[in-house]
Image (cartoon, rainbow, N blue to C red; front, side, top):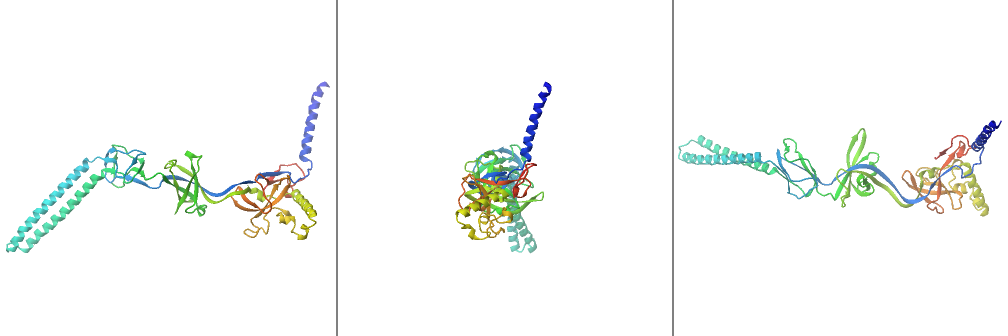
Length: 434
């Protein structure tokens, strides 16, 4: 028997605990207006609608420096990040073959000039003979043709000399603008070939104090982006600093990748501090609409359906006010009392717009929110809603004032009964936000 006592008391305690839990969970409960509510908070601040995108940074004015002649680079005089002036030598191609071609072209021009002198002297003698009747007309024409041919050959030889001279000058590669060497793609001793495509040797940026971002914007958002629009962006290297820019161009040519259509938007920004470098990835927010220093509530607060206990409490408060005012409110007629004034229109006084509720119609931007007042009482407050960013909504109280920090209902517990009220605690309980 003493051993059994050790097992009886724990069993009794377990049964008592189980009974207490069952009584709490399954016993019918009174549904008070403040039971099962989820609360948010009224805040004052800025509200913005933005279009987000990403893009890469690059210099606004960048020039690729190449070569028009082929050969081996004998010198490379510029390196990454060097600041150069217009006309400064960046690289030199080995000129031995070019010098030989220049000498050959010069010799060809001298030979053509000598041939022309000879043809002209021969023609002069033949003219004298023809004047004395010692040379037929046909032979004179032959000498005249020789002079014309020699003169044309001289012009061609001089053109070849000019070409050889220019090619020799092209061997010295100079900077076309004042700027910074962003890229150097060659080394001394490297052979470059300019037969078909001009090879890129250097990339120069004129001014890195102004840069641009090429952002890719989805076709669904491009209608909200326009020239002159303000843009905020960040880069990973300076994630704690928010930078600004301006839309300069929305390019009409779309880009299609995997059936996704995007448009390129050019954004220009200042870079006086040198924080931005070419090639950086920027995360951008295009500012579509913004309001400053306004009251905001969670978006769910404007879509809450009151439970019957909340509605009953409001009816009781309405009766008290009517009694205090000597029935003044009762003279407004059916449907014009507190229920309508507090946004109680609609079936069962449920949520929805105050007024006719038609989108775009009168009262369509008026909603009812449920707040806890200074006395801790729950009351409905009609407000006019404004801008929404998908999470919070701008509100303007239609009567009285709402202070920042005021608690606002964002959800009502749903226990299985209509209006969010059930008679039993049993079963899983969620929250319904409509």
